[in-house]
Length: 365
Image (cartoon, rainbow, N blue to C red):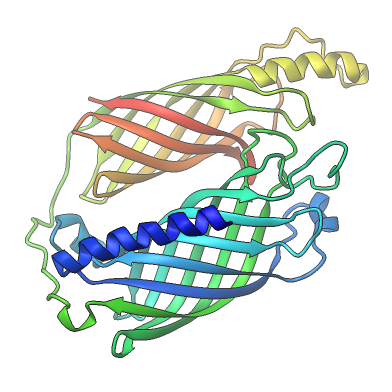
């Protein structure tokens, strides 16, 4: 925890120094939260023994319309967060996370919605000998997402403000290593914020963009890969490879729709088929089933500056082995480098059951 806190303080210090020179207001805030783990899966019921508590510290860079995308989204904040959470269970331990986030404002900027993505460190992950009861976290490094909705009053008195609301904090390693039942914590939070440069805030710059904007259909080729493991503990981690081709149609400056196909080569599934054919002969698995899958999907892409948020819903049209059902979904982020090339970090799952974190590259033609 000491090193995470030092990194977070250093990040704040560097940004404070830079922003003082630019006279560009920003805020820092602190939230105390108290809540409970939601029993989304009965297999984690034994881990829910008390109410969880923790702290969220955040840096938020304000925007005023200097760049065109800022006015499109009602002048959001972007920034970084640190979370400490005591899971209040001896088998779960504690979590420490670092995140990047956006804050979006509504109701005359009194309602603030935050979405954040990051990585967390767990102090007591699963171990088959010393901690076999922790079937929520199979590794010490976890992918983590949190969303927060606050009634937010900034600059009540000389830069000082207050806020209160609710949050949901998710921890999972996306089957990078089994077990991976994950946790979702629903919390109530309360805190304070301070605006640096509160007496020097510039005026919001109104958008001068043409409201109408469309593009011709673009064609995408993408390659995704990573490592994951089946739900059988200690069955081994294996690479996967996904080839995707899809068309997208951008209907305005914010949104585009997708339609396309995926081809999956998931070698963990190949090993899982072999395992079931030997260990569970009554399941009618011969071991010769094809592990490859082909899916078709539709999706949506929300553009925020050079970043975009992707959601896709797919259906396997080639599905020789039954694994978690025919319907799959994908959510995640893309980052564009120029007009054609992009990198992507996405989560593929079947409903709420994660299969893999995908690292991808692509080209949009």
